[in-house]
Length: 197
Image 1 (spheres, rainbow, N blue to C red):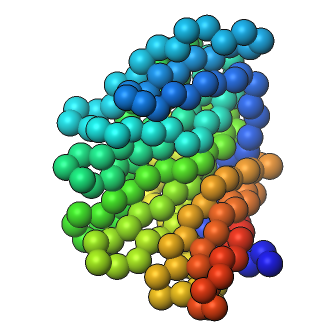
Image 2 (cartoon, rainbow, N blue to C red; image 1 turned 180 degrees about the horizontal axis):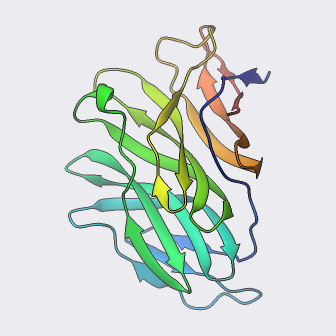
């Protein structure tokens, strides 16, 4: 059963994927983008002090111009990872933080991204608070600047420890997006949620 999670404030993004990207995550991130043949992958280093990186989603607006999202750890705390390819050159960054109201020691990762144009994207992910539940969110990039995390409210039947996650996001035009994933409900079963801005 699909459950609508509610709305988030998204100002931009839709998908136009042209290039193909190979993601290898162990021991460091390796990337390649060419079709129809896959060349040897190259390395992408995570920010200083990072370990256990992974990339989970990618969106490209033209050949060799892509953004990939995922996460990495520093001292056991998860951080969002955004890798941006510009004219074939990859740069890792971590511009997205959990809400300040979540406190300290919060782990955050990005799970999916979709872009209408370069520097205009929507990403979804989750964050968890120590000794508490996890939360799902959407975040919007407008003209190269990432906004604040927008926490998405779960349906009323969500379990106290719902363990929500969003696995994919798609947009047809700025502000018109759908994200899908799952959460545990109060009957101890999983329901696939959807969320729209």
